Image (spheres, rainbow, N blue to C red):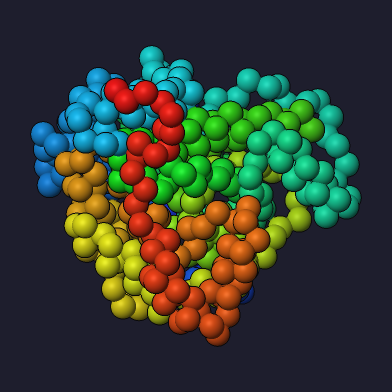
Length: 412
């Protein structure tokens, strides 16, 4: 890596110029993935995502936002089922490993996993393993990743369009932009999936349900850094990444892990929308997976359950379109786009994640059961209309009381 990664004095004067002519080489893979990208496309600045806007944008900042973030440090439990002291205790415990990773570089203004990539401790091996057979090498890497905790695994080519044009600087109140170093010298992106607990997701919205998200952020910190360490031991550079460095969804789609849904999530064959993703950028020669199409887009075109169920009406009805309602939407990409301001505002008033859109999705099923796998396959077939009717009839999307997840645990 270049020493530009630690130099910000001339930033943003040295901000990289987008090489739009070079982007034409992605046209074939864009078509395979179903991407429609116009000439108005602009790389996204991390400073404009909702969680960073909450620190500098007067249109977002409020007392509710402050209370929301405080709930992850000093929670204020209440009697409502799913928001008790037991529930917030589990929520904060689920985030503990992720928070520890995030805080490691605090004195240097680094927030690992959210604004900056994870720190590397494993030295680069002096010799590189042979990579003549890319398929065999990638198969071995997948085997190691699954052993280290990956629930899903895919590889795609590095595409600078999805790397943040700049990342937010935690040292400044305004979350000012700083240089994004992860992009230099990388040729492949490994995307790793982390499946969320089905029972907890059924209890959304609640502080208890939000534990499903926290646990996966903690797991992915460990899993992604372990995979990166493994690659470093093989003699190749690897940088583990969570929410930092790049937009994850396009990489996950191109790595063949699933299709994009109306609810803004990747719908995967084995976990539906109930999955989180991390990334490992590497210069190791690897075979790349291809995007998959198995019927999700057609189902989402017909189904609007997530949009109907969204309390603040932040999710879109109708077909995908280019652009969004505020600066938190990437420009120049035709897709379903949420109103992130409405979504985040609802979160802050509840003081916990919402994810109703994940819970009600017809693809949110327990696929360890054979009949749910059959349901998924029929949902992806010309019988999808019947299966959507059956999904409504069986009320699969109905919220489960959080106290049921606790089982025999004494009432607080």
